[in-house]
Length: 419
Image (cartoon, rainbow, N blue to C red; front, side):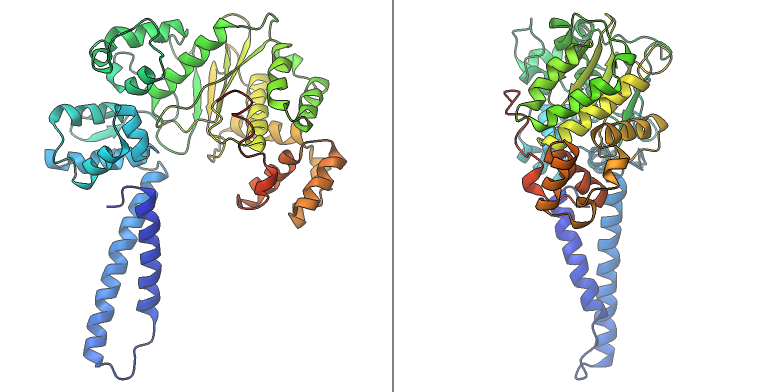
């Protein structure tokens, strides 16, 4: 079974080589009977590797969320499959548990033979796996089924490491034992209240099964930080008008544009918070309504590039303008690289694209076709936007993230926010 990306890449390479060998003509001096046996062995290996690759790709896609286990001995393999289906790497799981990545690699390589029952329980809790007569991943793309009593499913080790339990001075072990009151207190401090779905409807755009407790913890932290320095203005979606957007997009030309954008948002009552994503979430950003009359955008800066920053910021602004409200959503969480057929996500994508570069301009862009640095710089000057915006649009629509690397502002955003 393939357990990580490195194994996946090496398996794909081996599969390609075997397929080439299986399809090669047989040498004239080889005994025909031996050739039949050799070809059969190659085809058997190809079929085995194809099955491994197909299983890994299916798990990574998030299409599988239920795993059958006939006996307790099947639990280790179930946990490995659940981790992959969550979109969590071995390092993500290690961070979640407060372990080193190598320890998780050893556990999985030996199918958890050296792991204690307590450790197996910790792993299943971290993956938010519910084991009944079958093992099922909890979470389906919304946060409406979060179990507010499953405190061990929260990323306690990472929350502890980041200092989120601010009034707690004990050890990580003590924090785990006190999770039943530490986590609820933390959530209350961030106003992430567990109320009925009708009052607190949420949406998550993700490429895999959603780890709801981790999303809830991240939301609480973002709300907590925003509440410490809220904007003085009251937010109204109508304030996100053409003139205000044009002034924001003009900041893409400035070297310190991301930092200046924070003040621009605050002027119309939008708080802005940067908080790294938690293991197992793959978040880029979120748009939220607040209980105190201001809008809230949280970004993770998971991809430290200017093009990603501006697109994600405008995407979340689109949600604030179009989709956040008492009759729609209280919060929307996004992995902006994940495909989505949800109407509100398509509308937010369109809002971001048109705000940064209207269709009438994009239709005239030379860089759409030439994809050269010179063309990008020329278009950026013609249309009055930062080159990273143009380069990011080219890469995104071409589906090729190897081109124009020097123009997307890699490493330019986290530095501005002191990260």
